View 1 (cartoon, one colour):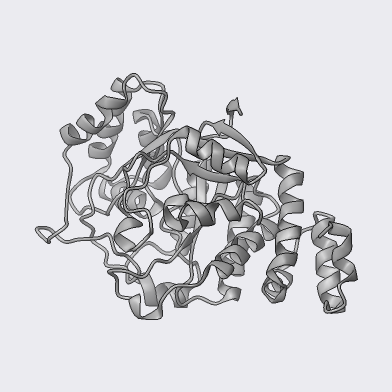
View 2 (cartoon, one colour):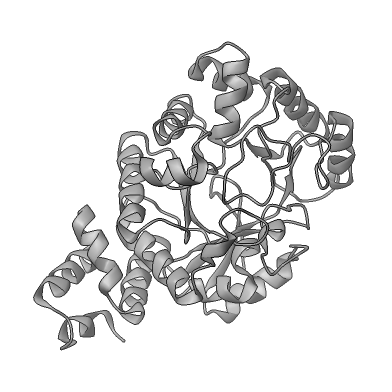
Length: 371
């Protein structure tokens, strides 16, 4: 379907045509207009999202060479959607020492890895200097690697534990070698939903303040949204609006990553999961609504390789990286890839077979190689 043909579809209402006209002119939608996108057919959303994505990225799809470190899954919080957290001594728990982590890093010494992604549970006893020392020792082994580490929820705890304000704590971590922060912990910003699924952890306002403070000292970040549990479509759009407002203010977000709720081994299992059609609709609407974000990422260990490839026709221009079987967060929640890893050539083929141009990037979307 050509973009010009959309407006001739007879089943569309006048209001729907007006909204589509705004999107194809790259105009910003209001919250109510964004909410109305969920009433459009998936095929229409795919055409519009692809139109916007091509305008921003010219058919390029990005990936990087990365691996994850998850220092511990011991956590002071007990979020209902989480399959990952454990208590001290509980079966399946772990807490790696810095020496353990260095042993995980050393095999990459002569590799072309460009990023290490570090997130884990909010450990009650480990503080900012502990994690700062960990970063410093990793950088001693891999001085050129970009370290993207610690969700806003982890940062909130470790900075308070250190007795510092947000800016002081983030500056200290930056001095240790922190390069950027990931987007985890955002979940859904709506306070009533948050109260039901993660009432103990940092508030939406605190998440936004931490990312704003990071942007203000030159630490870029990612943004996320956990969807497919008890939230409504309107809650999702309101969440995106708060991200869009902060991006207007700081321009500090690299990418937006919709994260699908997975049902295994957590307290919300009874609600099930949304289907792939809803996944694709959500990616497309994110691309359409977030007009000030350059990149939308489909995190392939969460969705699976096949669905991630399909998202490339629904506004997505990034599928993360090689991973190298280094994360357990989604495999513990029931994701298809129990040992997530993809070689560069697999990612390149996946992207090419979707009719797109594979681009190896660094964390900040500087191009390393175009295939």
